[in-house]
Image (cartoon, rainbow, N blue to C red; front, side, top):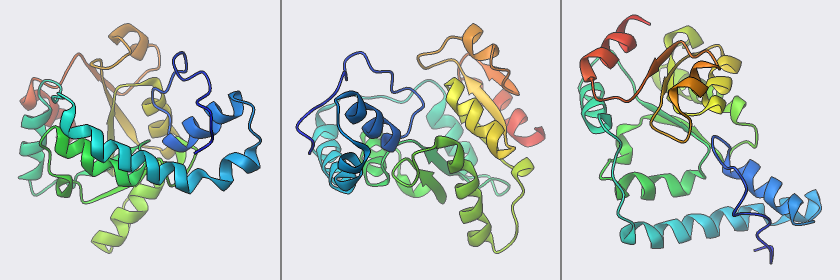
Length: 200
C-alpha cells in the first residue's frame, strides 16, 4: 500500500493496535501523517485479506488452559465474553478460527482498527456491552486478561482490573513490575482462574 515497510524486523509490536503500528512504521519510513492516513483503510483491508490467505497454512495452537477456560466461561450464565484487541476487526475471525475458536463466543468487543490508542478500547467495548444488555455496565464489573504491560495500562486507563498471564513475550518479573491485580504463569488451573473471575 505504501511502497515501504519501515524497520519492521526490529520494531516492537507487542500490545499495540494495528493502527498504531501502521502509523509508526510508516512514519519511520519517512511518510507524512496525511499520506499514511489516506491509505490506512486500504492497508487494513489488504492486511485482513492476507491474514485470511495465510492462516490455513500456519500451525498455530492455543496457549495452555485457554480452550478449557473459554469453554467454562461460555457455559457460565454469570459471564459475558468480549474481545479487546489491537488487531484489525476483519482479521480477528481468521486468527481465531486458525486455533479452532469460534469467533461467535465473543459477544462484544473493540478493535485496533477503531482507534490508534489502545487505552480507549476497553471503554468502547464496555459501552457496546451496555447496549447489548440494555443497562449500564460499570468498569468495576469487568476484568481484562492480557500478557503485556500495555494490556495493564489500557485496563488501568479504563478503571478495569487486570489479570496478567506470563505466556507471552514478557516474563512474570517484568509483568509484576507493572502491578497487575492478578498474575499467573499460565491459565492451566481453570478452577483458580474461575475463582479470580468470580471474586475480583
